[in-house]
Image (cartoon, rainbow, N blue to C red; front, side, top):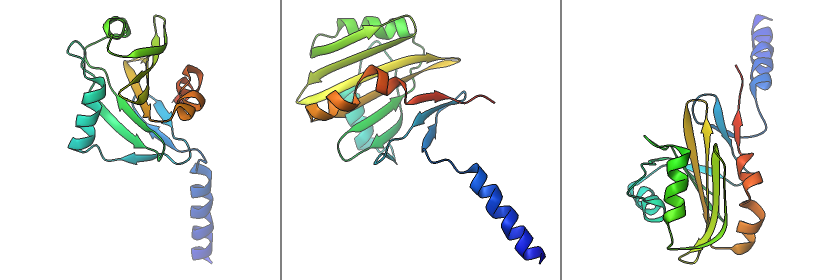
Length: 163
């Protein structure tokens, strides 16, 4: 009888802690909301080199933190180091090697969407309580870019949990 009670208690405990949505915990109670079909992949040197080839800037240090793969797009999550949203905005304003589709910013975030080297690229950064998070999404399909890479949809992927 004790084994049955222990089993039921364990099952109840596990079922209460399960969440339907997948979250990737970042830092300071922030998380990235995973979408269906997205998988966290290991950041291998090849992925890191790819990230640097798209988003390398000599004035900014934004090392790659996590890489998320989907069959139709890629998500790179970077943690800006020793920089601010203002510095990132200024660096993005100076980049002229691409065709900007959208560029919006305020004192807490920026959103840039552009076409470069046959890729639709979206960059989004936002200030958190004790740091900044940077998202970069890439796809070769305009339809994916138009449907998934909006400022509103991307900003909703960063959530804060309160303790």
